[in-house]
Image (cartoon, rainbow, N blue to C red; front, side):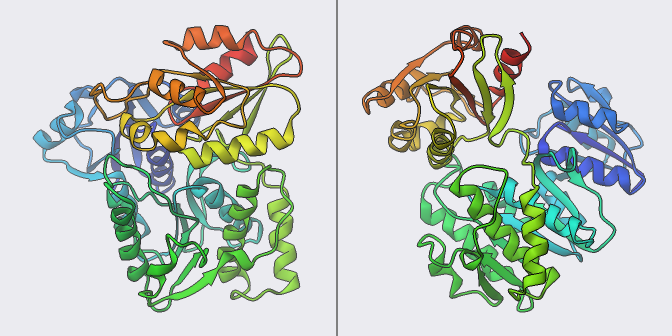
Length: 428
């Protein structure tokens, strides 16, 4: 292919794929709804982006159009591609085609996918294996969510939503952990487990599954595996720049997967030293426990992508262990379905905070049916003894947070665009 157009090119996976195709010599164009750090990154790399989605954005000579999962079929650019007879692929379908025939390592699971993928890519890169990597955030060590490699090792972050994981054909499947999520697609934990069961059974006999074999949500499905199973919890605890027990587990998963390429899964001292040295300097990724700076009043500001109750709880636990003083969280609930279906878990997830400011729910692809709201979530959090209030706009939240002072710690949290508040607080 010589010309590829991306609809929703600012998506974190889409932008990595766009960079990959550019490296292959393709002429890349794309559109997105808003300017973001990701679109700015792409423009610095010479990729032309149009803000706003219109039919005329689609080049008439494009050979293929790739669209993100958030782009509906009636999108004007998809409709124009259909009219022009241009072949279309979803992001994960395209990723599956690109990675086919390579030594693909797919990193899946409910939590830790992004950090584990970034860690694994860095270890292999530092070891001289020259992997190609597609990561779900900007890895600070690379300055990008994409790492260009020359070998046939292809490291990708895989998502289970809408069974996207099953579009891939990994030789190595890493499953970090497993909990109910994406409740707008998976009606139950068992439905989610069925997707992972299929993924496990699709790994070939000469492949490897890296996971926590003691995880009760995963273990029952490992009996159907044709591939070798490696328990990453047998890895040692690595010294990291990143805080939190969850990051130690991410490092163990990345290390276990890296051993397959570096030392045949053997616990050799030379291999272990190489892995530990690489992990010790891993700087983390955008929006994962990211320290942003200080406000004009001296409060420290962090930002994190956590949007599932377990991720919220563990992130705040790590923050509480790191800082003294008051912790104020600005939380942006992501999806009505997730907030409603995991409400009991969210209610107790903020015990590590002193005060919680709840933004209006980020709807993404959903429509408000009136069954859940930020006010309901705030009320449930208050019932557990944690001070919480629902506020109706980012402007109001920013004003509240600006009152924090020296010794206080602010964390903006959520999968929406709450990070913009953190950025504003440290620049005003």
